[in-house]
Structures are given as C-alpha cells and as structure tokens.
Length: 318
Image (cartoon, rainbow, N blue to C red; front, top):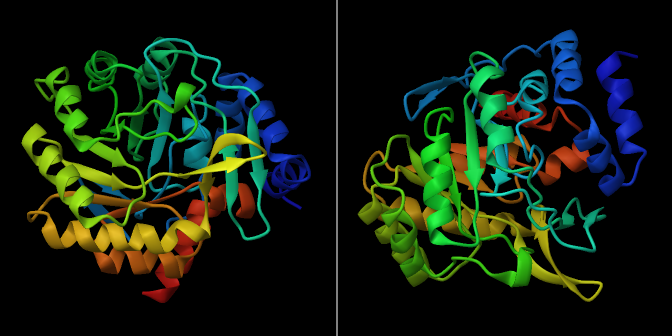
C-alpha cells in the first residue's frame, strides 16, 4: 500500500470535522514536504486548456473551503488538481461560528457549518508569495462582512493570485449576513477599482432567471471576468444554519451554467461548482458551457485525489 492511500484511509476513518481540524493544525511546511515526497500524478490525456491566460493540465479544481489559509497549495498539487482555490480569506483573523459542523451524508453530500474561519489575509498572502507550486493556477476566494473589506482583500491578493473569487454568499457566516443582493455587487466593486487581476463573482445557488440575469449584468458593469456558479445551499441542521453541498445541488448548478452561458457575451468565464462528483457530471457542466469545474464534497467522500479521479474519468469519456 502506497503512502498516499494509507494517509487517506487514516483520514477517512476519522469523523470529517476531526480530520479537517487535524489537517489545519499541521504546519504548512510539513504538508509541503509531504506533497513533494508524494509527487504529482500524471495528467489525464486530452484535457489541457487555457483559462484567463493560464494553461491548465485539466479543468477540475478544488473549491474554496478545504484550504482556508494557503497551507495546502502543494498538497493540492500532489492531489492532481487542475487548479486550486484558497479561502475563503477574511480581512481579519476570525474563529468562525460555533458549533462547528462537518458531516458526510449517505447521499454523497456534506453538511458544513464552519463559518469562514480564517487566520487573516497576511498569513495566506505570505504563503502564496513564496510557496506556490509551478504550473498550477492558484485562485483566492475572499469574503467580508463589509464592502470595503472586499476591496482591501482584492488589492492585496491581486498580486499573488491567478484570479480572485468574490464570495458574496456563505450560508453559515455570522448572523447570516451576506451580499447576495445583486445590487450590492456594485457597492463591492467600487472598492476594488482599478481591477489588477481577473475577478470572478461567486454566487449562491438559484433557479431564478431574473436574479441570474442581474448577477451577470452587475458582473459585466464591474468589469469582472466571470462567474462561479454556485455555492452550498442554506439549510437548518440540528437547529442551526448550515450549508448543504454535494449531488443534490447538481441540477441547480447545471441550470445556472446553461442560463448564464446563454446570456453571457463571448469570452465571459464560467466555473461550475456544486454536485460535481464524477467525470460524467464534469462533462455535463462543460458541455453546458462551463470553462472549469470545482469539487469539494467529492474530496470528503472520494478522498484527496478526487479532482484527479474526476479528471481521469472525464478523459475516458472524451
């Protein structure tokens, strides 16, 4: 049994929240060295593409939520991800909410209530400034409780991130406050000008066509390069707000990608996230108009090599 398989089996035997805490308590340098020892699996054939000027081995990446503070960028490289999203990063250190929840569901989904824990922007910034693996784009997902905070984070990370995701929806933040109203997007982007790096707006799951059209209009008005569709879905779990991820979101994600692609101008970037747990579902979103796809619940269920496994299945389908 190889080291990677043994490590995954050990993590898989633990409750997900305990495994997440164990990973985040490890020193970044230790995770870096483990990744270099493991190496990177071979790229699945026929999937290379260009996105926002970057060349990717394949279009399957790791969504924000796993690597809060850029301590796992080399680990993501060794997991075979096509790209990696750090965050969400907040403007200041924040412990998140209590009680914290992270559970696997028999359906292949997850329930997540962490509340955007973050060590603050400087930790992630310094890591990315000197510790990025070559050949794999690293994006940063930013979130804030104020519009001004988004601007401060964007200016900081625009120099070290391949692109920046503007996360206006997290279903388990403090007091459920978000910037989900499309009109609030324009307030955020006032603090982000001038745009020095590609910015993608990360929006919540919805099947309201008028709301999607307003998100797109606001993104274009702000000069954003694309939209990430979507995020976890708000639910109540054991009496507290939480976020549902996994296969039950896929049809909504597919609806969003199809509708946005039908409305968006040529060259506008779309990233699909929500329920992508197989090569077949990745292909379905790409065929519908997504440029890239992100996975998260699949990592918790299928293991750390989930992005590479999904990409390999996608390569076989093509």
